[in-house]
Structures are given as C-alpha cells and as structure tokens.
Amino acid sequence: MGWQPLRGQVALVTGGAGGIGSAICRALAAAGATVVITFNRDQARAVALAADLPGEGHLVAQAAVEDSAALAALARRVAEGPGRLDLLVNNAGITRGVPHDDLEALDDDLIDSIFRVNVRGAIACARAMRPLLAAGEGGLVVNISSVAGRTGLGSNIAYCASKAALDNVTKSLARALAPQIRVVSVSPGWVEGEYALRMPPPLIQEQRDKTPLGRIASPEDVAAAVLVVATQLRFTTGAVIPVDGGRPLG
Image 1 (tube, one colour):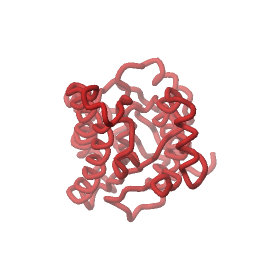
Image 2 (spheres, one colour; image 1 turned 90 degrees about the horizontal axis):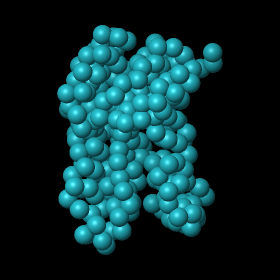
Image 3 (cartoon, helix red, strand yellow; image 1 turned 180 degrees about the horizontal axis):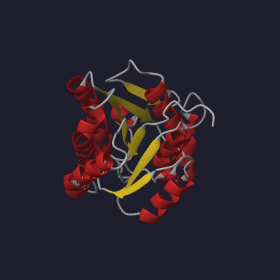
Image 4 (spheres, helix red, strand yellow; image 1 turned 90 degrees about the vertical axis):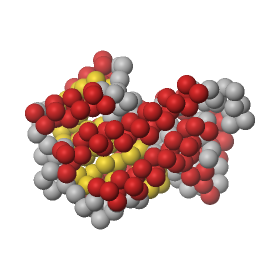
C-alpha cells in the first residue's frame, strides 16, 4: 500500500471537491487518511470524488463554512462516525476578478461575502472542530492562503486583504490553541486550476514568466505542501509556508 503516514487518521477538507481541494483530498487519502469532504452546492462532484479516493470510509457532507450551525452539526457527525479528527484543511474560499482601481465594482456585498467565507469561515471551522482536534495526541489546522496576502496583488483588493487576514488568523490561532493544536498557512501563488482557466491566457503566461521557477503551481504542489506540514513539519506552527515558485521575487 506504500507510504501511509496518516493511516488511521481523519482529515476534513472544506470545499474539498474543487480543483485544489480535490488534489488535497487525494494526497491525504493516498497517505492513509479517512477524508471528510465538505461541499456547499455541488454534491455530485463531492460524491464522485469520495468514491474515487483510495481507502475506505470517506464521507461527504454539505456544510457551508459561513453556516456555523451546519458546522456544529458536522462536528457531531464526525464525533459519532469516525470518532476523531486529526487534520482540518480550511480550503473553501471565494473571489471574483475586479480591477484594483475599480472601486465601484468592488461592491459591499462582494466584500462582505469574501470576508464571510475566506476569514470568518476559517475561524468558524476551527471553532467547531476544536474539541475533536484537541483530543488524543492533538491536531492540525491548515489554512489555504495566498501570496496575494503578502503582495497585495490578486483578483481584487478584498481578496488580497482576506488572505492577509487569514495569515494573521493562523498566527493568532497557533498561539491560542497551542500546544494541543498546530495551525499553519499554506500560501500558493497562481494555481493551474479552475480560476486560472477562466483568465486570459496572456495573463497566465505573464505570471509564469514572472515566476523564477518558470511556471505556476499545480493543485498537486499545494496538496504536497499540506501533506508535508501534516507528516514532516511537526514542530512548525504559526508559519506561512509559500508554494509560489518565488513569485514575489519576480
């Protein structure tokens, strides 16, 4: 069965059926974890992913991260089912491309929804899952952030600010939840995924050209970073791990 350092462990991945999320789920399942995949709207995609993962016992649950009652119900389901939770990956996030100088297009509803999902959602998930994560040998929260939080360059101003806030949440939670729970951000740059496919090809090529390693990240690059944090960097907490090919240097 190969290397399975997470055998017997349970991981929950929010927004797990998306491009980055599905790669994370596959990597964790291949490492032996039982994976709980949450979705907001696309149940069929999440169910298909769960059926395709290696191993057994994977679960699918509808739980929007901005719905704290649904998250509490999910925590009860995990407690009553697998009975443990070792890893929470706060992967769910939203954005929409808005030029940074077009402040009128960055309307209040969009700003509020971005912060509600990208920031409040991560905190709410950690809050709901904390008792499970703190049990036993302790757990790990991985927040999927973005280089936009460091550079201020991204799909829109509110998105960049939300990822900066998420990295700050990582540091605050790491302090607050230690020593039982570690908290780490994994921070990719552009990723060859669903969002990038909607962008003009010349824009994506420009990002490749400005990245010292000559390409942008794959979803599997992000998944590999999550796996390394979970299995190798066991004395790391409160850190932001870049997966950006050196893009801020370009």
